[in-house]
Structures are given as structure tokens and as C-alpha cells.
Length: 458
Image (tube, rainbow, N blue to C red):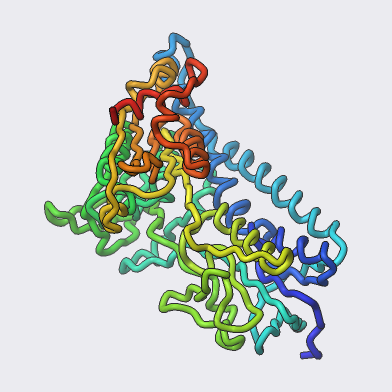
């Protein structure tokens, strides 16, 4: 291998942190090489947010078309062309990816290199016969679906959150292993496309990090949509049958259960992309699962080396990865002092209706020993939701009894993510709940429901 090519900075991974960081570094005169294994844009654009939410939108159209009679609209039989859904998804992904790549290639001072990166020494990276060295190195390699841990499952060609979006025909019966955010989005999506769907969830509730009442409401919605959900169930083994179907044997609270389906989706966690990176060669420590250890300033155990996004563990959301970039930009390029401490972590589960979450839930508040009051209200009390015939779900907000400040919120309802964002803004501005209760909102809007929600605390 030739002598390392010298740069001011090396960015490994063209994800939602790596792309803006590479161009920001270049714009202040730091010559940067951006190394990407496959596609610009990272998980979000290529396998995560962009393609999944595009397909969720298609599934919602199918759902509404079947419900047209509820709105007094007459339609014929609803058929889903999954190949066309896939092509629409691909078109949007390619548009986003191409735009991002063009911005990189149009920025002076950034060299985009495709290939598998691995550390060969401190702050030195090799890629396909070339090597690069810089005083600053940023790791943004992301993660991927966790491999199967069920005997026989690797021999039945299971789908993951990437490959399932490349199907051109609707599965007859989709078995989903995992009841977290990813599993539930796909479960409801394919049910709406026309599949029979069974979810096998190891825990006692879906969405294990949520409060029990929210999880129960989600469970009710999915079952109403025709999704079969098995709680406290664990897949024990899987095999391909002679007719091409897949048999999964699960242990449940009621005893052993056999489920025979056409496809299996693995949705039980993700692992970091670090095994080929060889971080130890650079003095970068990882935890037992391979996630890179960082401090609140995103510094690794190796001087001059930082990690951003999913590869470091923690909340695996695109907006968190992008905020990691902003922390690095502020501290290294703007002489700031930003950290990840006390960073709010909003997120939305894009099932339908959406679940938007911000701040503390009851479980977390109790664990912290914080006093709180709870405002709750079913979406069936919301005029706008009734007018749209989308009244499933509930709203729930925790408030501090003394300061009247909002501590956290869960909005399971039509456009729940957008309503949650309004509550997040109130939290950011330290707006007490009674100011929101007495505010004048336009009628009829979803925001208007906050008047009634906070009136429950009087």
C-alpha cells in the first residue's frame, strides 16, 4: 500500500451526519475525504425514513380507499400493485440520494470516495488499496438489522427492513418477529396492502419503552386493523416446508404455537457497522455489542476521532444523527461548547394513527422520582378527528405540579407527530400548561384539542 494521502479530515460514512459535516469542513478550508461504502444518504434515505414512509403513504391510500363508503364515496374493488409501490419508492429514494451526492460533488474541498473503510493505524484509514490520514476523523457508519438468533431462521431466507421493501408481490402471510417501531410500521403497512400478518413479540407489551396505556392503545388499533399479535411469545425455531411456506414454532404463555406463513420479517433490533471498520487499530473502544463509546461531546477514546449517529448507540433517529453533526460543527468550527446532555429526543412512530413522543413518560418519571400530574384524553373527544373519521388513539401529557411546565407527551392520533411537535415547542419555550389551556386556537384544528386536554387538570 502506498503512503497515506494527507487530508485535514476524514469522514467515514455519507449518512445524515457525515454528508453535512464533510461540506461544512470543506467550506471553512479543511480539505476532507468522505468515504462511503455503498450509497450517499445513509440509512435514512436508502433503507429507512424515506422509503418506508413513502410506502406507508401508499398503504394509507389503500386503507382509505377501502373505507371510502364510510365517507359516502363509492369505489370499486381495491387492488395493490406492489411493484408500482416499489417503483414509486425507488424513484423518491433515487431523487433524494442523487441530490445529496450532487451537493457533495459540487463542493470544493470534498473528495467523495466509494469503498469499504478500515482503520490501519491511528487516524489512518485504508480503502481499496488507497490509504488516508488526517488529524480529524469522524465515524458515521450507522447500523443494520440484527442477524437472526432463531435456529433454522437463516435457512428460510428471512426478510429484513431493507429487503422487504424490494418485494414485487404482496406476501400471503407475513410473520413479523419483533413488536418495536420498525416491526409495527411494516406489520400495519402490509396488512393494508392485503397480507395476513402475525406479530410475535417477546415482551409483555408492544413498544416496550412506552407506557402501558399507550402500548395497549396501539395493540387495540393493530388488532382492529386485523393484525394478529402474540405477546409474551418467543420464536423457538423455523423451517421451510415442501410447499415453500415457512413454519415458525413459538413458545407462548398458553403453550407452544405453530404459525405457518409465506414470509418472515426480522424486526428485532439493529447492530452497528463496526466489524469491518477495525476500530481497535485506531485506539477506538467499542462496547460489548460493537457500538463505539463516546462522551457527551461525541469524542471517542482516540484523540481526534469522533463518532456520530447510530454507530455510537443511543437513540437511532435521523434527527439525532443530524444534531450530532450540529454539535461537532458548533464545537470544532464555531468555538462552541455543545453536548448531548439533556438533549430532547422527539420521535414519531409512523403507524396510522401516528404516535408522537417527546420528553418523559410515566415510567421514566417514576424512575427519576419526579412528581407529576397527567392529562389524558381520547382522540374521540377531538372535533377535527371526528370530522375526519380518524378518532382512534389518545393524548397524554405529563406536567410538573408546581411549575406547571410540560415534562413529556405522547400523542397517538391523526398527525400525532405534528401535534407532539407543538407540545415540544411549548416545552422549549417553558410555556406552562394553563397558557396552552387558555390559548385561542383556530377552529376546527387538531391543535384546538389542547384546550380540552389541559382542562382535564382543573
